[in-house]
Image 1: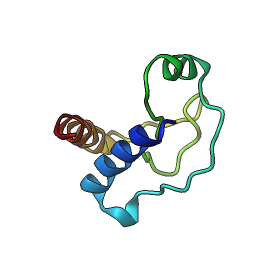
Image 2: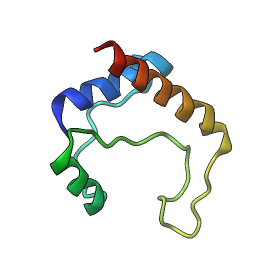
Image 3: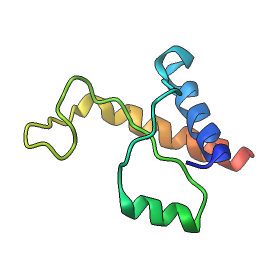
Amino acid sequence: NHTASTELAAAAARALVGREAVNEQVKPVMVSEDFSYMLQARPGAFLFLGNGPTAGLHNPTYDFDDNAIPYGIGYWVNLVEGGLAG
């Protein structure tokens, strides 16, 4: 993750759900090599959107919680608005 992109992403999340609901101290993880290639070309940040107590994304028992959709939409709106303001 790039520092400025991470700050923008965290600010968008905090604006949506509040500081106490955003964990900015997540340990680095190996997530996706395709995203790493993209970050070599353009600054960015990878983040996790909470989906409740379910198995990981590529696990056959993963259950996407449709109640997370408005949070995802709100996050992206905040991200775009914050990026345009900067």
